Length: 399
Image (tube, rainbow, N blue to C red):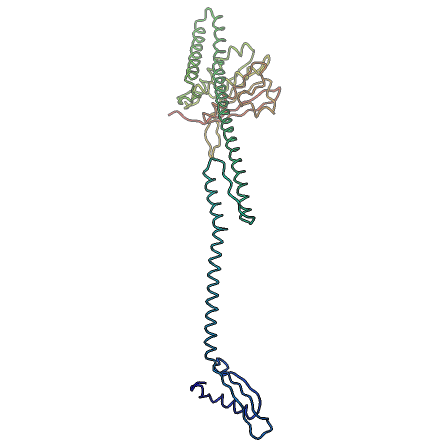
């Protein structure tokens, strides 16, 4: 022991004296919390002897503590080094076996998004989860590319079909247009024919000849306007509304068909107020509506019958507002229309008189013209008892 160690603490001396008196073997550390001394005491005579003593061995733990400290530092450094090495190794292995495959997958996804060529399959290494993902990715891209090709083919076929349908729709529209114009031309031609026959029988009545001649001029002018629209190949355009006496306009149509009605022994009655204010309306359109309805009514009457035309002022409710209207009803005592056909009578080319030469355009034209004038049309009918058509047009006073 060095010189410093010869100065023992009082607690150590007291413990050694006590061990000598007791004559027992004793060893302990001092201090107990952070010991720097190891003390070993062994008696050198029996307890029964009068002279007692012991041999004490005191060992300094300074060097051992320093070695322990160094050992702790070494273990700590070794642990840190192991952690760093393991982390770097994990990063390296993760980069090689996880990051690089994932980067290849990402690049392949981006390339597949913008590529128009079949995708090249990614190489598969090993049998781990990433290898399984890569295999599924290769299978998925192949199936998607095949689906894209099928979709492109189907899209091309659909576009061709759409173009074909558009062409067919144009042809249908052209057919409707041509049929509509043919129907419009046919009606005045029938009137011209009837009036020409009547004119051939008028030898001495100059006034009647003049009146029939004026009707022929009006109808030929009307045919000229229709043909001009057909030559221009434009859809039916509504003429600008003009000042119109509705009673007089409808009376002209009734007068034009009077010869045909008398020939069929059909009584036509026109009920209307004594006078109505001038209204702003398309005269040609309202006359065409009345002409088509009366022509259909005459065709529906077998042998003899009656047609009643009634014109009056009424009102319609639109958007919670009461609007004055012009109400026109045309009723006949013809064969009537079956209830199951009422919902279709305003459709193009629908007719129940195909054997009698019906084209199915008269009521469709009526519906179109009334709609263009902002009005509504409805029909009531019963087989064997006749039909009633009700038309309401918004009342627009001429300013």
